[in-house]
Image 1 (spheres, protein in one colour):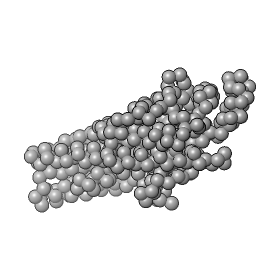
Image 2 (tube, rainbow, N blue to C red):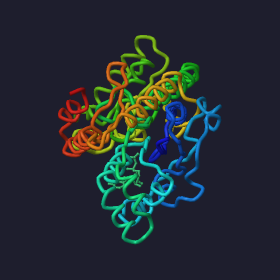
Image 3 (spheres, rainbow, N blue to C red):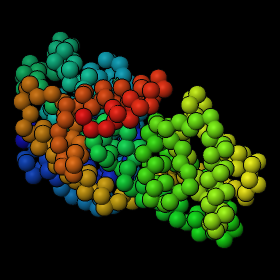
Image 4 (spheres, rainbow, N blue to C red):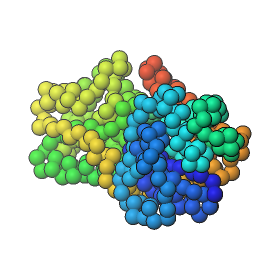
Length: 363
Ligand code: ADP
């Protein structure tokens, strides 16, 4: 059977295990020899025990677990050609020519580069007698399929990334808990949620929890935001509300690009309204814990589709990323999506927020 390996790279997210499980089982079902690569690209470069054959039961009882059981890491070695050469050698000597990468845009970019270089890496390995002529010929094509694991929903080309829905559940649960104590003491709570460049979690959490105000990176507040915020909070209290909830995305800014932090918002509320105000920073709780049903199913569907894409690939097939489009798992050209995602980041850095939002929408 064909050699196929799956690995998780970059930041972890809930639902990655479901995706790994699906890749392993679909691969075995279709007759592949399936491998785990542990610790992301680092395991690929280091080889040894990091690359281990998987079987049907090695992915039993993992679907309900957060994080990734095969580990994830950032890897400086893989950024350099020397590291990629070692990685290529480790794959070829095991007969692996199909890779499923689950990560963010950095991980996907690395995989695409690896595929582009594959032929020249193999030439160099042959020259140095690290692989045989037979191996050079037999494993001459590398196929790549990606999936995006990220709680931020910050990738272009997909309606949802794996992990976003679970993170939202975690946030909403936390807000509901905070609301009950805020009610008792008539407090104002400022909740900081993750999302450095993408306010999706903050925005959707605000809608679902009927928060009074949300600050996100894509919609920087105007100069008179303090006045407007205070007016709104006062109105709510006058109409009988006993509490206020304000949600701040990690990357929230004003029109000059200055950060709007939970601390700053608290200062404003305390100084102007003298409300009893507390901050809750949710942090990594958002990334942990068991995945939602949606993320489990999303991982399953995407994993199966990724394996199908690899099995159908021809030497001309470009690297693809499996995404969700209108509740269908589809394959898109990997680098198109990465470029669009990078264009969004650039538009944000250029303070062209309208363009960023437009680029992020469906094409
Ligand atoms: P994410 O995948 O979540 O965006 P990173 O950007 O940190 O996270 O990328 C994860 C890993 O992918 C890096 O540590 C590195 O090993 C690899 N990688 C990222 N960008 C490249 C690149 N341009 N070339 C080669 N490898 C890369």
